[in-house]
Length: 222
Ligand SMILES: [Zn+2]
Image (cartoon, rainbow, N blue to C red; front, side):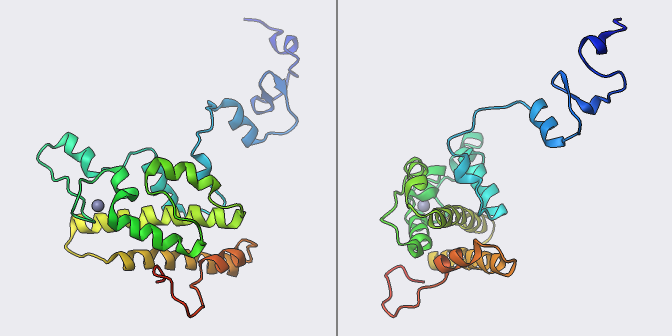
């Protein structure tokens, strides 16, 4: 036992454990600083800013995160555990369901995705998952539209997965227009909530997500 250990290390005799961090003494205890010193730090993944951003809708984001990690039980994955399970996509009924098929190689999913982001006035987006991840950060120069696009992408994933699960567990089905409308309604509700809370992000996002007022309907207007 080293009796004069603390003094050799420059630690005052009556310093608390909370005051000593990383071999030096700090005047105040800041939990964030302690957490940053004790937690393992990994390199930031390339998709982090696509999933976790300033305008998240938490349940949409959590769901998108699980799909980025490919952790949700799509039918192709279930088939690996149960060879007798069905694999046909529950949304289009034409091809096998997989992560990449659902988002958005499936014709049903693709139309929902296009209808949601139609309000952002963007050039035609890619339909392949990997291409979308590369496209999202650069799809628009305006910060609010970029955030709205991330919201729309996560909402599309969330409501398509919800519709897919509803079809799996019941006979109720929604048209692709109804699924897109649900997503847009929630995004619009989110804007109204931000506005009523006085957030500076509310008005510009509301302007993006509110339905078009013009009389010339787009083929994707809903
Ligand atoms: Zn499909």
